[in-house]
Amino acid sequence: MSDEKKEYVFDDAARERATAELGRVDREQAGYPRCGLCGQQAGRLDKFGLRSKTSEAHQEWRAAARAERRTGRR
Ligand SMILES: [Zn+2]
Image (cartoon, rainbow, N blue to C red; front, side):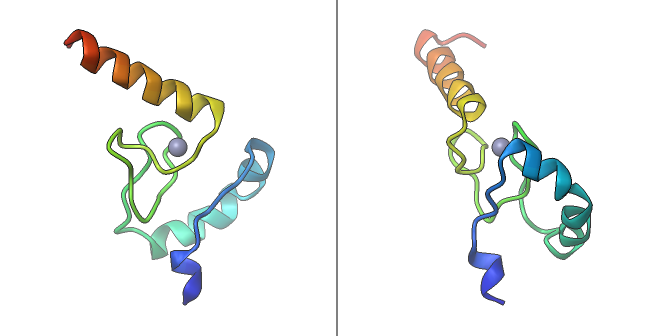
């Protein structure tokens, strides 16, 4: 089952089409954590609670998290 080690990378359109398929995979990967931004499951999350995706939205999320940490805001 080498698929489990592969990272699931979809652009937004492909992700929508794959939603039904992911629903099935979802059960198989029930133990995997979910990305805090897009909710997709990943084998591991980074320190911001996101899967290792570098889309603009994910980068902005990380930038915001870093900024909050720097200012000590809660
Ligand atoms: Zn995500």
